[in-house]
Image (cartoon, rainbow, N blue to C red):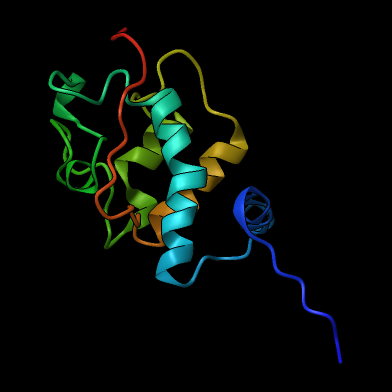
Length: 138
């Protein structure tokens, strides 16, 4: 009989985060939620929410909810579920056209790749979760 190993708590999140980073695609609803919470939400909070969150948003784009992401701003939806690779969000973070986000410098390639994986899987978002700005407005 093989011994069973049970991983829970912070160690589980560390292992799960490592699996996501290694390229294993989250398939269950719980895995997709965990992917959003551990991989995507921190990127949005650190690099996007200061300008695209709260009551006053630049270019009318609010990235504090999936609805805001799909509704988009003045340029249209930030994410295209039909053509994910054509999403404005990915164009902006790759800084290929005139749209260059975040404006203070390009994200690390690993972060861009993580956002692209998320968009391609349909931009899952944790039910009842919103990305929020931390600290004072910029």
